[in-house]
Image (cartoon, rainbow, N blue to C red):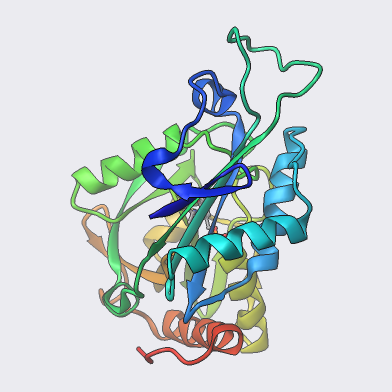
Length: 287
Ligand code: PDD
């Protein structure tokens, strides 16, 4: 397997990163996960825009132009012969010795690392849905930055896993924010409800498409969020991300959502989302 370290494509077991990279010591960096179908990137530009925007929010300068980065990512996917899979890329602020919370006034060289893996579409996710638990959202207040600090997310997701569920739906008090690694939505009386895009959630690229296709399909969108009480009375619930597309949530904390199956609006949105993928990446097996 080949990986990217800075601007070099190398064998994974030859890759080296510094022990005093601020990415390790402070989680000081940003990342993206981009999906590829049939050897074509899906929403590549949107992810790269968000990567540069996340970096700018922490005053991290990405040492590559967008075309340079594209050439590097293309070479990574080609070298690993990815057809349908994911690329993970991160950029840390780089090496600082000795360790110091204060960011050096002359910034170190930012360190790009990236890996790619073949991951087929799991249509059972979309058709059968998954279970979720509820967890208090204890993350920091800049969830709009796709930063490497994922401890709050990871601990919540792990609690879900230990409970036999797939995802943790997070809430700050009464207000539902998002999933630990996905955006969260509910449907009530034909309306699609989700948290506003602000500092409390990551504005998902998948979310942007879902909200657009909802409007195109005449499904009213309410972006003012919803509460735990609303959620308990939802007709349908689903989550979305680059890797899980539109995944229905059929049970929350042991309580069945709706009739326990993927709901009709969730299916309609996923069908429309699948069309978007096919427009950019070619035919997919229909689910
Ligand atoms: N996570 N919210 C959070 C907290 C996320 O981690 C993600 C994605 C999303 C959805 O964003 P998008 O639709 O752009 O993938 C929302 C990625 C997939 C991950 O960390 O693996």
